[in-house]
Image (cartoon, rainbow, N blue to C red; front, side, top):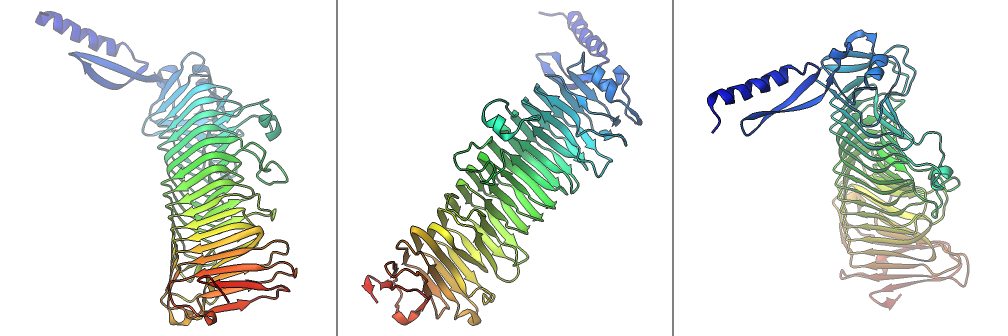
Length: 520
């Protein structure tokens, strides 16, 4: 049994131990048995002669301190940074409430803190402010191949949070393995307010990264990844590697950006989930030349060139369970872009999303073809769908619900699809179209259009339900070769006469139409 005197001596020894560490911040005092347990968060910079007086440039002193102290703690104060501080491997910087890093008026670098080919860097609970509005500055700039980077609870103003870049290496060098980008990057619990000339978070050629629980506003782009130029005339050919890989963006809010909300070029295995994007001068969520990537469970609104979008050649892109709205009916709720006009853009899927036009009637459409488009189980309120673009191949529109309470006269259709080639096929099945406005009665519910000169396009239209429409179908055929025909099969449980199908087109060959298996 320990006597009371011995216990008192142990307790006093613990107090003396704590008081003997003036350069350490005591972040947590717990108990192991009856003895205090001390966890330090870093050397208090005030013991090293570094003062946050808001006037003195302390960047050189911080650099000197890092030569002998891996972990630094910054108490309340304003620490002026006149030049970028290079972080050695294993560095941890921790701030307190009221500790602010402020760029000097003469600051000319891109990162307040920089790491070049370093590992195990942590920024924790620090705040950065950039007072040079025209200068893109980031709290942390990664050069070359850094790894195990953690940015936690960092707050920035007129400043980006992170830029990761592979030094001066270009796409060809990286694809050949001559240089690598950074990896194992985590950004969590951060908040950033920027200006039009900078990105909130910019990841070039990075892999295995995670951004979560972060709020960004006022930037040029909110979150951007870059693994090459997705233009097929540059790096974006389908057989070229995508050099940003395995990224996760979760519970991130992006608002009021001049261009893209969350987007990137030449990524593979990118997941965007549970994010909120609003008021973008360009796109909301956008995959450009990406493979095997998805956006699920996000809320996206008021993005000029598409709340959901793809550009150039993609493979296996899925938009699922998103809630999308546009206040301006001229802004597409979703759009497929492909300036190359070839079907090398592959496998684009929209499933289980909710699309709403706040005013007027909005649209989901294409500005370029795709090999396979699947549009299924979506709910659309005052939104029409146009998936007819030259050189499409397979278009599948199934089990969607369309509701109209406003005039759709500007489009004169609710579903339009076609313009396929290479024995293309359009499937429109099990959709529900509910028109609640009398003036829309003459709008075509389903409008298929084809003009393939060299092969037989097929339209398979089955078991769709219409309410409030007098013209449920329009079939257009514009093929110009006499030996080529189109075939349209309409199966309907609703009573349907040949007069219910509007025929159009200027073909030089016949078009075959079948109603419930009977040729018309």
